[in-house]
Image (cartoon, rainbow, N blue to C red; front, side, top):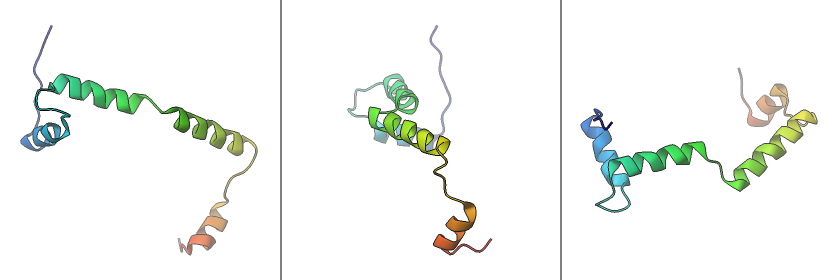
Length: 74
């Protein structure tokens, strides 16, 4: 079953600018946007795994050290 959706003029203009080619459908564009948010590159997956390993190993920045390094006064 097909349906319609409501979008503001501003959103429609932004979607129009995001189209790769003029004949690309809004459905194809929206599916591409959804896929982009759901999928991480292999590099990103590797970085996440490395970060998780470092955290489990205790390699974390202490808030006090971060504040001093960045000269934050909170």
